[in-house]
Length: 154
Image 1: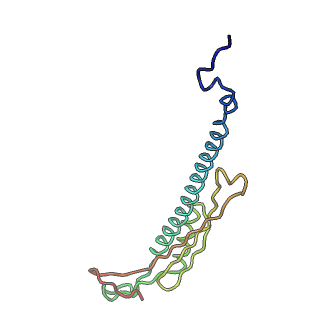
Image 2: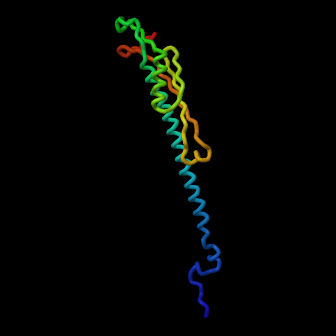
């Protein structure tokens, strides 16, 4: 006497479907790994961009601290503040050099503009596509205030 199939796994149709979840599982795991890789890449690129902007802002502030006061003995209300362009450019460049990035510094009137160029080496795509260039720009403006009122700097 032959045994009667009592469970769905004992039928020939169920045997044909055995292991059908494996391809689905492989595809889903690969999709999740691709999403994780994308998040790592996007997060790293965003961080590198923020760092470039931050370094540009700090270098501009450093350059903005290089001011000259004229006339030297005048009272507080009569002093005229100007940015020393050579000292401001040198201070901002020194800050960028100490941070390990390259950049350009422009001094015009009472504004210092710094543009930073940096390289981001991606841990995943970087081995295929190579390093990515990121940049950041910031401007610092010399403002003179006395008791909350802004006065001309020149």
